Length: 345
Ligand code: AQP
Image (cartoon, rainbow, N blue to C red):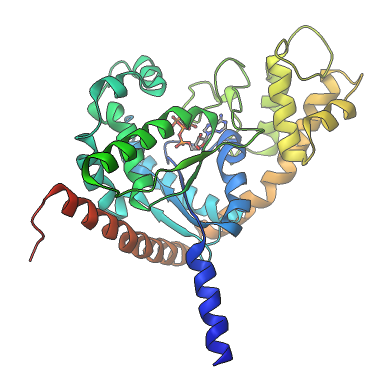
């Protein structure tokens, strides 16, 4: 009897956990921007939230992908999630295209989203400029699919980098609009944007965010870069003509490097500034490389080991998809009912 009470209490605690959803596109080599802005935060959040971590392949195809590369990138990203410490026993880890409800709900949400809203999205405008030969409907509809990802799981919290804040605001608007038109259906999600590292910038242009699809390989550090590549890229990182290692609006390149150093060395930016007082960039840059390599090396080793165990990776994906599908289907059924669709007999 006592055992049953304890069990019930544990289940209740489990049930009461708030829901968290986040994802990354398998659209290239994952960068330290994705790691600092997303994965690193997920590791602590997964302890306290009912967490759902997705590999958003449906999003990735909004930009032309080589199918064999997309497949490889998806396996690599799954192995990276696990190698970094995401735990399939605690969290739901799955591939977006394995749960068709994402695309189905996106279609319904399209009918409560205005073209004007999508036209205003900064990422859409940026991507149109970068992919002028492939301005497809999917690119424009990306934020609606993202709203679908989030709302399907009645998500409370969405950890994102600063670049995704505008999309999350649109998800909230879509949820509120649907709720007021059809009656309460969705939880309205809140963003979680970390105080530091939510926007890691390009190593070649501190005015642009570090991005895995940047054509200039020197602009980003990939999670799979070798120590030599990492050292070389930091050495080539653009700086100013001053020599002081100081954080400030007038020193965007050094501020970015300090943010990266503090994220990987596990100190605050102020502590890092103190550490490199009077040192100059020639000392600072190799030390950033050391700090990044120290974190990446064990992750890379574990990622490699996991990639050789496809049976295990398949099990993680199958179990993740099943858990995700069950929850997603429940929300979609509710949505279809609210919309007035006749249920399938
Ligand atoms: N530079 C960054 N700094 C901090 N966080 C970042 N994120 C991405 N870049 C940075 C965060 O990583 C998560 C996953 O992003 P995504 O792959 O879904 O899409 P994205 O934001 O478009 O990332 P990329 O690297 O720029 O991809 P591509 O080049 O394919 O478009 C998100 O939480 C994002 O905020």
